[in-house]
Every structure is written in structure tokens, then in C-alpha cells.
Amino acid sequence: MPIRPGDRVLFYIDPKRRFVQVIREGGILGTDKGFVRHEEVIGREIGESVMTSKGVRVHLLRPLPVDFLASMKRATQVIYPKDVSLIAYLAGVTEGSKVLEGGVGTGHVTAVLAYLVGESGKVYAVDIDETKLRKAAENLERLGLAKRVVFVKRDVREGVDERDFDASILDIPDPWNAIKAVYDSLKLGSPLVAFLPTVNQVEKTVTSMRELFVDIHVYEVLLREYIVSEEGTRPSPRMTGHTGYIVFGRKILP
Ligand SMILES: C[S@@+](CC[C@H](N)C(=O)[O-])C[C@H]1O[C@@H](n2cnc3c(N)ncnc32)[C@H](O)[C@@H]1O
Image 1 (cartoon, rainbow, N blue to C red):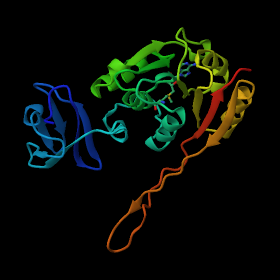
Image 2 (cartoon, rainbow, N blue to C red; image 1 turned 90 degrees about the horizontal axis):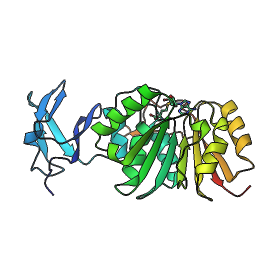
Image 3 (spheres, protein in one colour; image 1 turned 45 degrees about the vertical axis):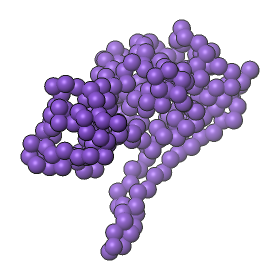
């Protein structure tokens, strides 16, 4: 189907130059390799390419969640794709899900969740800091996903008005203080997934989950890329070291 205004497109030049934009009349992609007017893209098919003003080829691709982070302006530490993918998988987020997110920050997790819940789902994105929410909203707007998100300025530890969430995700410094509030807002049987940088935080969180959640697990994701070459295929010398731990559990009757 031809690309139309309102469509989300990944402009791919090389691994370091990948930009997700929503196509608009009069829109423009500016890069250090030249610019592309959105008019040149409208009517083309995904998989085709165009040239920048400096004659550099740009591939037009369908954006995947793994492309979102490169197009976001960072306001905080973010959860990396390797961790977000397991978080979203464990949370079982799918078309139509209603998801509670505590600790929005830059909005990277929010964007992935918004992509997964589709037009019929909703992400309730709660942050204590108004500035972070505004930055995240701008990032989501740029990705064309803001309509799927309700931004809520609140301390998630004090709970939210909404109930019956299908899943909840926490990325705040002290999730153990938010367990009861999140528990109250979840459907029975639904998962809580928390992301934590240190083992001490993991211990406190799991301890506070024990009475209210079962099937509790703690994971760490180590991801290694491979460079394929005729001279010798081998692991990339660069690997993300420590990011954090993922805690999972399912709500039960106490
Ligand atoms: C590390 S950032 C989240 C980053 C986000 N997961 C991402 O990948 O873009 C943590 C956020 O939690 C927010 N926060 C901290 N304590 C909070 C609380 N009690 N309730 C709601 N938000 C909180 C901070 O303002 C900050 O924006």
C-alpha cells in the first residue's frame, strides 16, 4: 500500500542514522547526510528508497519497536530494547490491553507498550514529574503513538483511580513502596513487571511481593550481537554491560 500522510515510516540510512517520523504534508527529515521532503515519500511503497539532498540513499521501512529509541529525545535513563522486549513479553501486552506504567521518564517503554496495545488498548503512563511527562508526550507524539496513552501526573506509590489493568510495569527507584497500590489496580492473575538496576532493590521488591503475587521470577538479559564477515564471523567486541534486573509476578488473592 502506498505511503500516505499520517503513516509512520522508518527512514534508514545506516545503523546509526535511523529516524522514525509520521508523514505530513510539508514535513521534512533533516540529517547530516542531507534532507528529504515528505512529499517525495508520499505515494511510494515501503521497501523503496529515495535520495537525500546530498545524494545519500534512504530506505523507507516499516518502523518496529526496536527503532523507537533512536528517534526519542532522552530526558532520563531509559530501559534498553533487550530489556523492554522481555518486559513486554512477560507482561503479555497485546492488542487491546490496558496497561499501567509507573515511571515514564523518556517514554521509551511507553512507546513500545503503546505500539503493542494498538488502537483499542490504552497505556496509563504515570510519572511524579510534570517535566518528564511533557518530554515523554512529545516523544510519543513524534512517533504517532500519543493517542494510545493517558499521561497521569501522580506518585504511583499512592495508587491510581483506574482499575482492572491487564498488566503493570514499574521503573521507579523504590518499587517496593508501590507494590500494594499497583496490586489494587490490577486484575486478579495479571502480571507486575519491575525493572531495577541493583540486587538490593530486587530483594526488597521480591520481599514485598511475596504475599500478593505468585510465580515470582527475577531475570537479567545478556544480549550479544555477531558480526558476519568472510574474514571471520565473531561476536561484536561491543556488548552492553550491566543494565538491570527484571522482576515478574502474578497477582493472587492474599
Ligand atoms: C528511569 S526513568 C523511567 C525511564 C523509562 N522506563 C524509559 O525507558 O524511558 C524513572 C522515572 O520515574 C519517575 N518516578 C520516580 N519516582 C516515581 C513515583 N513514585 N511515581 C511516579 N513516577 C516516579 C521519575 O520522575 C522518572 O521520570
